[in-house]
Amino acid sequence: DQQVKQNSPSLSVQEGRISILNCDYTNSMFDYFLWYKKYPAEGPTFLISISSIKDKNEDGRFTVFLNKSAKHLSLHIVPSQPGDSAVYFCASTGTASKLTFGTGTRLQVTL
Amino acid sequence: EAGVTQFPSHSVIEKGQTVTLRCDPISGHDNLYWYRRVMGKEIKFLLHFVKESKQDESGMPNNRFLAERTGGTYSTLKVQPAELEDSGVYFCASSRGANEKLFFGSGTQLSVL
Image (cartoon, rainbow over all chains, first blue to last red):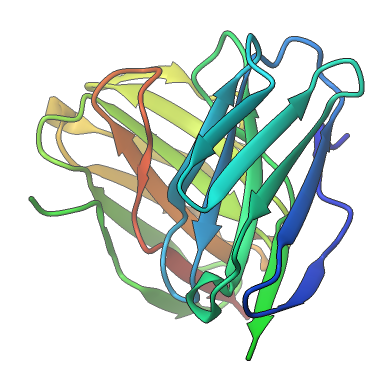
């Protein structure tokens, strides 16, 4: 039973526009949420995170929004750049330190 | 500072054979994790070491998988005997503290034929 779901396997966005990646979770014990970015043949790298006590966290071009009542989070990238093309994984954690990941969304930023 | 190193990067073996994957965490990182991604699905937790002790091995699929971290430095993950469904990318990650940011290695792509 998947506790973290990324329902869009892929997304294509034009350079300069906004990319919005979505993630839903089912476990109400999750209290910390992260986004990881993965390039081919590399491991995931941490991008941005948010605690359940917040509803927004911003870091440069990247903003994560958390809607606890809907158990939904999203990652906004604006403006999108070609170097942002990668697979983005949503992940969550609760009292244990292990991460539960989604299946990933492949973002393609086109020129 | 060197990152998390995994060896080999690729391994192709036949069903029934044994394979051992190695992970060298970032120096000073007591926490070491193994994860696996099968066939484009989610990245799944396998187990967590704190130094040389297994903190959580709830994600280990079955007793064909054996992880060790002797001396609390590098770790090995052995699959014996390998089955077709074990194919996937095995990632190792490390962190200084249990709730601190994870740093991932590039993974080992395991193909069982």
